[in-house]
Image 1 (cartoon, one colour):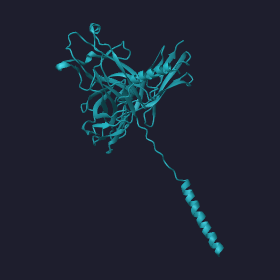
Image 2: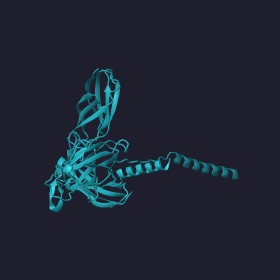
Image 3: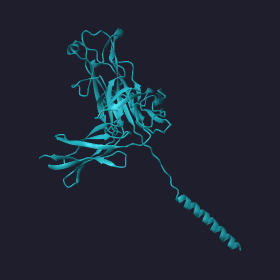
Image 4: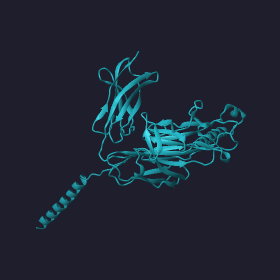
Length: 164
Length: 255
């Protein structure tokens, strides 16, 4: 009788263990991953001071150019544009004087110069890191004239990275 | 390495460091947001300051449209018929993020018309130094779509053309969005010979087409292995619907 009780207990324990093991074996775990579209931008110098012009530059009509680079990456194709900041149509000059925003010019090769009026593309980016998205070098200069008021001028431009 | 070489190496590193100072570098995700008509919960945008100094940001909206070649143009928010207008909420609209930290911006859409999709661009912008001649702002645009109530994904590939010059082969084709929802198709351009065998192909990465708009896509294909003869260029796009769309463009590779 004692053997029968032990045997019954063993079967009960085995059965419980076996059914627990079976339940664990069929349990699934879902691992979720949400990959978002993302973009990165970095202009390597966020303020530029154009060199003080001399007579040669006044005679040429333009300042010497100065440049910086736009670094960008993303996991979507994207566009980098540049434009005067929202609402900016002039350079702010000394004592309330101004000069037109389109005196400002940019170039990707320092030979073909473009006026900054509305948003224009300066480069396209593909999905990938810096290796697939080389820095975009942008040079800037300003038209200048003898009749402009003497003093310091400044203007704000905006680079925008947008998914295509 | 002798002392002079070491100094030259150090000088090179200093020049490189000076040329690429770590300034206002940041990222935003996600940059494409679709909010269903019945969704009340806001979408969280993550703004990561990847620079070495704290950065100040502002977040605001503009209306936008896309030309047939993909250029974006912007208008004051609420001025276009397609704008999400006053339905759109952005909070906070000004914030500071410490170096290496992430801030969250909540973008929400109040319930609106179910019969049309609206779209606006949410811009996350940081301003640079206030000293200098040319002051630079940087911003990342987030395309926001408020989807109409009934799913309407309906696109097609219209006619295209193939041009060949010394730079290689370029296949261009126009995609038309006939539906109320924005499209984000992707796919492949296959080059097939007269037997129908695929002899070259080029991937078409995802791109946006606004509702009731067309967009022309240009895809470069490596033609270095193509013998002179007659071929078909076959763009095949997946719009996210239950069908693929494509077209065939007959062209010839000359001797």
